[in-house]
Length: 424
Image (cartoon, rainbow, N blue to C red):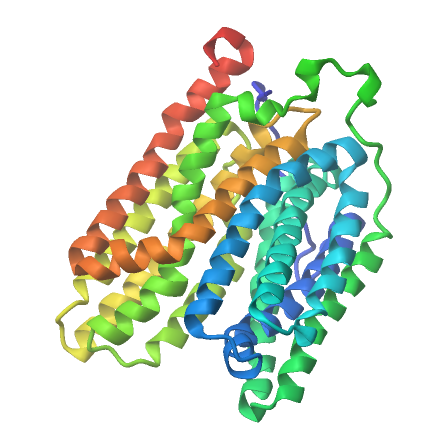
């Protein structure tokens, strides 16, 4: 694990004023692949639940169990995928995994029987989480150090725009409501993966950082991230902060519809508010994350904003439609600002606290934490937050604030460990 002790220069602007595309050719290529991939994902995720239940005929409970088990497979796949990126290079690993995902995701229209649904879902999710881990290592490998966090923030803004556009286009499928329309939409997602795999072949080649197996000692063959206790602690804290996505995607819709008098249309408006604010402020939020200590303080501010958002959302309970709507909108705005800050700070920490020659290993572990939060988040939010009303939202806020605040001392611990191995 290494950290930078000298002051880092400000990150250069990633695009010219008035231009939508980055000036750096590598980041520009990654932008196009992100746009295509996210567009396909937006199409697929919008229709997937209805596709599995209405078209393929699986029950709601069956689908929920299958997707939960698949999520566990995704958690388990992140770490070996990251190690593979160190061993073989992140570019070939990402290209191969994305190509495999293109083939596997095209298999959904051919499904017959629950076991096949389970196996294919596990395979697709495992490969998808592996891609996420290896892609994070690819950013570390392909982008200049001063561009990694800002570049990743820019790509996240592109992702949000493309996902939103994909969701809008999926409305055509939902309106048609035919097997042909759903099948075509699922296959469009598969085609997007194939295009991304072909496009990524144009990335400049980088040598793999790992040494040949014959020259590695037994200690070197172990995953260094799994033995780095400060980094593991940061990973857990980031996983807690990542529960914000389950709050937004699961908690807020249920809360608005079941427990407030606000209009149901606010559910869609809430997602729009979040998307717009992320697109506008995600890159800007990366400023001031050049050093680990600064990034940790950004996480602290993000955690406090997330907590304040939770309190505002919880206070909407029992109020009239207008008052509830005002508080919910304010809460969603504050949550979105907390999201962009916590994400910016956590990305910086995931790179700054990682080992120089094991970016894949560290990103694999970090992504495993994120995947674990995504797996348990919906159940945790529905039972622990929605099930307890305003007190549940207050408890969620306290948890998020505590995780953000803990980033500061834990990062100091990690920095001490970088110069004093006995401290780790």
